[in-house]
Length: 350
Image 1: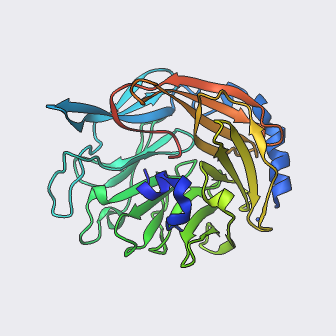
Image 2: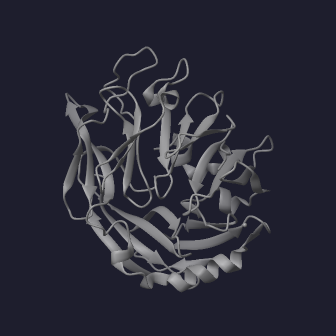
């Protein structure tokens, strides 16, 4: 779960982000081509029976007034539905009151194996392994919110393996965001004017973006020790499009571009050299919209596409595709329906 500014990354030139935590673009592209769209469906998190396809919260209405309701649910790869009975649904405000018009943050790791949420009984942040059902409780110092901040005043996100968790505060850039090592409890801070765009697949690099005083956008990459390894003022074609993803080399940023004609194009930006690769036409149906993009651990790309209802505007299906960065060819790895009348829903890695 992320700040509204991050969700609207297509307006990235106006948003503020940066963070914590190298091989060149050509190497990453070659790796992507080697994975290609031929990655078997069994290799994807989405198609694994016990992992999460998406997390969701129902929407209810009364006298034309809509509001979140029910419990957090996890739609699994085997088609079953898992209920997070211990997860806080309605956030506590900074004054300790329950806000039934909003929801407490929840996030899913990129591999779909773990979810983070606020535990209802004690208000602590926990990370649950949905394949083993084991719960790891984060240190109380992490769960204790700064003065004036409630559960609904922040967003969380998990790295691909769920080993790192970020906390971004919606406080007009006054409080630094956090990167928490889920296993050790170690905490690092992200400058208050910055927010995380995303992790590399191995979790060793974090891509961040920050608006500048000249109305441009700066991307930076930090390694797992908090050292900045790359930084550039990026071209508008990179800053103003989404989704995007950072590769394990800490330099290659894949960006999906939706054109006015309805087509999708892929470009790979090399942060080290400040160069943008040639546009590659992505071979997907025109009625699909790109929602999420990630580099896979073996150097390929994976793309989540959505199909929306012409009548309601709601997303009713998600298609997960392997994407060849060299040719734009795609192969379907998974496809599933999304429930209707949802207040919110989150894919792995969002």
